[in-house]
Image (cartoon, rainbow, N blue to C red):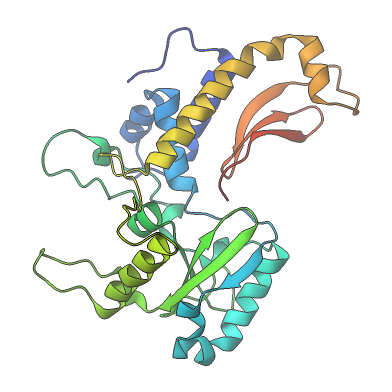
Length: 290
């Protein structure tokens, strides 16, 4: 789906900035052209699918599930866990503790091709898309590359804007995929699914139907698609008003607006923002999930 010929200038600039900003693999001109030709909603789906793998730095309340605290590793790794969770509570930058893959593997145009043999999950975090769990390395040392020391044990958590729910501690065999449907799951991956099933059905009446997660045929979470559609609606609804000086002045409320605001659309993590270049400030039009 290609961009509309009547696409407003600010929205076009925003769409192309998203296409350029998402790490592509392969990282070449051909992959960039594929992204630049996408409709705004489609590129927003790609952006959200990539950016959701990060966590915006803001203070969060920490809750620890028994599936985590009852694990012997909770005690053996207590020093590293305590240091990491202190960062969570303070709102420190958590990117050094996350996977390195999103830095270079944001979107693969090949993953959205039609036909047989396409790996839909090549540019997606399946555990995050399906279960909603981020995983964090617990190393205390931040190297010169800006990454925390990689640890065999990883902490799984469900993260919202104000809450950090620690789900469990696993080793890296939790990421092992079966080579065939008959091959048994690794012990850690099997435990992950058991924990997920218990958390998903917790409190549901016996015999009731529970829809754990909705995944589109593209491999994207249906929630990501809905979020992208909502952002597109907001952009096309608000953008024409930005040429009205009265409306723009109202955006600044009690603050005095600049004579020439120079407004542009931006994403800050998963928040849809309107950035004022003159005042160097941003107005959040829609908050993201984390």
